[in-house]
Structure formats: C-alpha cells, structure tokens
Amino acid sequence: MAKTKSEKKSTSPKKSSEDKSFEQKAKKALARAEKAVAAAHEAVGDSSKKLRKEALALSKQTEKLATKHAKALHDLKVEATKAVDQFEATSKKSKKSQAETTEPAKTTEPAKTTEPAAVPTDGSELPALSTTQLTPPLPSPEPVPLTVFELRQKAKEQKIIGYSKLNKAGLIAALDSSQ
Image 1: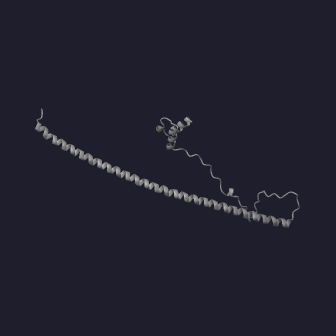
Image 2 (image 1 turned 60 degrees about the vertical axis):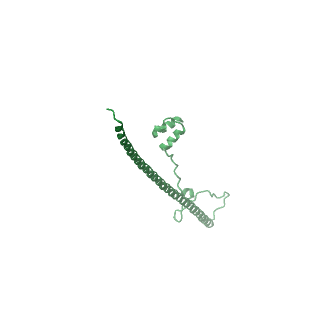
Image 3 (image 1 turned 90 degrees about the vertical axis):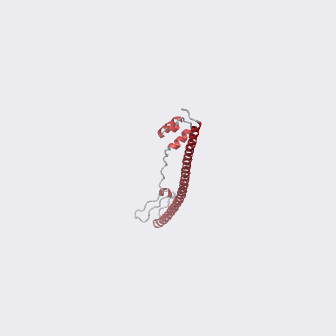
C-alpha cells in the first residue's frame, strides 16, 4: 500500500542516521587502515636503516681484511727475498772456501751460475725457495651461475617474450637460443 507523506518523513530520518553510522564506521576503519599503513612504512624504514648499517659494517670489515691480507702477502715476500739473499750469500761463501781449499784446475769455460743449488745432505741449511714457490697458485675462478633475477634482466634486455613466466632452466634455454 502507498505510504502517506507523514510515514515517508518518519522513515527518512532513520535512513540518514543509518547512513551516518555507516559513514562513521567507514571513517574509523579507514583511520585504522591508515595507522596500519603508517606503522608498516615505519617498520620498513627501520629495517632498511638496520640493513644499511649492517652492510656498511660488513664493507668496513672486508676492507680491513683485504688490507691485512695485502700486508701479510707483502711481509711474506720480504721474508722470502731475505731468505733467498741469505742463502745466496752463504752459498757464495761456501763456494769460495771450497775453491780456496781444493784449488781446481784452470778451465777456459766460465762457471755456470744458473744451476740450481744442491740441497745439503748434512742438514745444516736448506735452500730458500723463491717467492713464487712460497705462495701457492690461486685456483682459477669458476664462473658463478647467474641467478634467476640476473637471467630475467638479460632476457628483458634481449626482448624475449614471456621471460617473466620462465623458471631458471627455461630462461637459460631461451637465452641460449636467442644468441
């Protein structure tokens, strides 16, 4: 049945009060969401600061270790050079003393100085090694496999279609086939 004007007026205020309460609830929910977003943003900022500090500390530690390594390598080379010089000096002295006592026959050939020194069998002193013999050769660096992220960047640069959906093996195959 049709409502009268007075009935319509009486129901209108109820709807507006319901609308107002709904708007208030929506505003409260929006305010809570904004607070949560602000808290999350602050947490991310704090986390980023911590990560930057840790990265800086690791960078400094790496620099210190590299400096220490370089100094140790330098010291090792200096010690090896001293040992070689000392051995050469003692071997020259021993050769001179042997030459004076035995007085070898005169020859027209010059003495060979490039022969390696013999290792004494009496254990008095051992020949020094050259600096290249003291430091072991470094292993040749093996190629580090690329990460999925790096592979995707290469695929993007080469304009491979659908690269974002491929896994690592698929990316490698696509990159190999494109070259």
